[in-house]
Image (cartoon, rainbow, N blue to C red; front, side):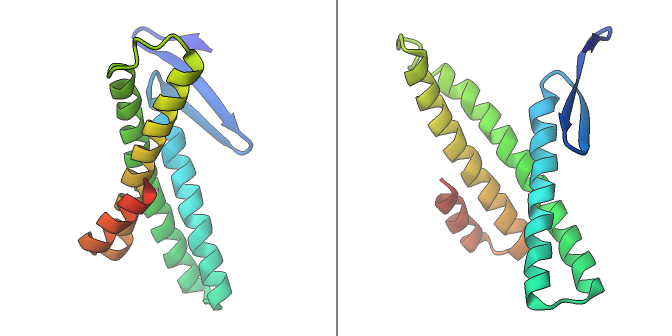
Length: 139
């Protein structure tokens, strides 16, 4: 790890992916990459099981990667916001770090899951009503 003038740079290594980032961008960058990889993998598997051709694979992989990346970004940003909000909202009086972690973890993961599910469904279907349902299911 090295320190620049205004920023502490770090490298995160995940098998074949290296993410260079500045400060707090690292978790969001990982969320975007993981979302893109997951969206692409899911769509490619669906296309394979449906017996798609090469064009189908390209379209579904691209759409899955874009949808997953945006959903990862939104879900990660909401999760980060929720952690900060929940840490400052009424749990400061608790003495147990385990209990604090459980409350903040459960709250932030459910909010980020709902936001990611809403965003993904809205991107892929364009249907606001089903996206709201998916967002509530993501909680």
